[in-house]
Image (tube, rainbow, N blue to C red; front, side, top):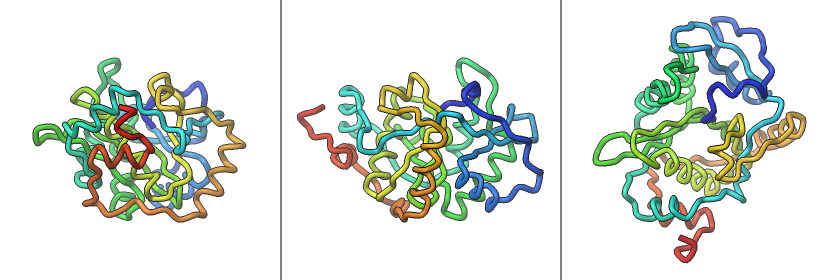
Length: 235
């Protein structure tokens, strides 16, 4: 999640057949594997299995004070599952540091199918009526696998992350997978977990049940922070 290109810490597998289905994709997630593409113009995808997995401990999620104040101010409107296509379009857009993206047409189609099946979700952040940032990921049992996030307005993706974790905690999720650990994610408490330990946690999480919640459920900023155990005095 949120770390395209961080491949030194990963094992690459043979590229999957072109007839990969949403069911096969869910089975891959259950086995600790996820797909990527070389770039948007490459029609093929390959499997990735990190040697050390980025995991966000849901009970130790850290929200910097400035960000907590931004969340509490409700300067953004935060919703879920309203516009998957716009979110993945934002995530696939070229970044400032690179014109390449790992999200190709096949990735879009597969995750769109998972969205239609209720296994893919978005957090969308709107500012002055337009989509300012967001993220998407895969839900399986009580595990959530973050895929990608983007922002057009400062702090929009960070606000999306705060609201995501609030939703996961409220819904009884047990595992929040970020794929890789980056310097950016480390500020929120993301840690690396060795593959064999990660797979043990994964196997337990996907057998449990969690609730994403209704699509029209909107957390106000103060409510999201309260779900994370953060009171007004801490902001």
